[in-house]
Structures are given as structure tokens and as C-alpha cells.
Image 1 (cartoon, rainbow, N blue to C red):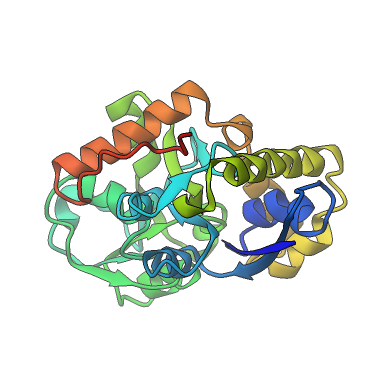
Image 2 (cartoon, rainbow, N blue to C red):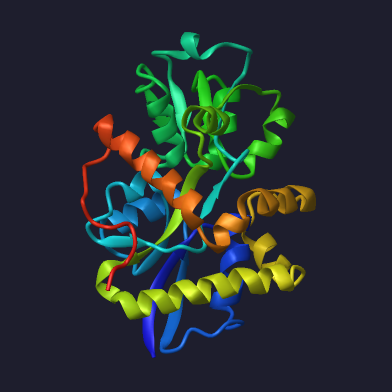
Length: 278
């Protein structure tokens, strides 16, 4: 059996998606997985060092990884109404936040990419783990923050105000759903093995949908927020039909995001295909 390293985040959508795959609920012939659960920005950095065979990443990071990795069609986070939010302690405007310090969940996160694509003037950033951003804004260590994951559902409990929904901005600007994170495989794994893994990942999602109670303990074991409704809302928001297969619209959304980032010289150009080729 070939052992492959597999990185994904402890967030409920990822643990829900990968539960079946790593608990041998779905077949993936010739392969065993050694999972590594890390914050998505840590996964981004590990992939930049080519240290993971398979990994969840931010689409921003994928823009820097295309020489060594290909995108899988299953397992990612892409959709509508699920983008990062910009929050602050008091009501303000994006114009007034230009030049101010903004906390972000990682340099290579899609949250930061969307912030930079929105407009110039938001380069003064404070990089923090995503679950520390709300506290930093509340304490005045940052003038605003870009929040993701469970924070979308809890920021109001901290008395914070939404300034802009970056996902909604992207949808209105591009006409596409927002690509947040995808699953990558090293190109040198080869087309045959990568396709088997992609198929097994889709089966893992289908298994979780068919047995929704079974992954619960595993999901809650790793979740930052333990409230059942928060966990459920998180999974419902980030696991959807695009997680099963990107489809044509999903691929167009990814291409649009990456091409806009290339035009702004945020990521390097790349002529290689997003997906594995024969």
C-alpha cells in the first residue's frame, strides 16, 4: 500500500468531507492516508514547501502552486453566500478603512486575495489565526478584520459590525460563485492515481451525506465552535454540490479568480492545466 500525506483543516466542512476517506468507509485501492490537520494558512505554507502529497489549500495559494500541484474536482469549498466578511468594532466604510490596519487569517488566504482585489490601499495587514481575529478587532489591535469559517456565524455575539461581505462583492463583480479553497494533489502522483483519489473523495462526501450522524463526534472533536447549530450551519454553507464536483461553473469561477489575480500581479502566470492531464 502506498502511503500519502493528506492535509486538511479542523473546520467542520473539512472533517465532514474527509471522514469517510480516512476512516476507511470508502475504498481507495492501493493507498492509505496519513492525515495532518492544520490551519489553512499552515497548509498553504506546507504546500509551498512541497511537503504534502494531497492538501486543502486556499485558491490564493493555488495561484503559487500550479507548477507542482493540480486541482481535484471534489472536496473543495466554493459557493454563494459563503465569502469572507470584513468586520469592525464600529460602523464605518471601506473608504475610511483604506490605509488602516486590517487583521487577516493568512497572507495566502483567499480572504486576503479578495481584500486586495477589492481595491488598493488595504496592504497594512495583521496576520492572525482566523479564530483570533475577532478578539484583535474588539481589543483595538486592528481597525478591522477579515473573518472566515465559524466566525461568520458568531461575530455579532462579540458586538462587532459587518462592513462588507467580500463574497457578495465578488459575486456581483464577477457573476460567479466564490472559490474559497480546493483540494490539490501533487502532479507527480500521476493521472491514474489522482483520478482514483478524486473519485474516492467524492464517495467520502456522499458517504457523509448518507450517514450524517456518523461523522459528528469526529467533527466536534476538532471544531473551534462546539455549538451544534454553528457546526451544522457551517457544514450546510460550505459543503454543497460544488464540493461533489466543481462542474463547469465552478471551473469558470476558479479561472476568473486566478486570471484577475494574475492581472494584478498578485500571483505569477502559469500555462499549465488546472487539472491532471493524460
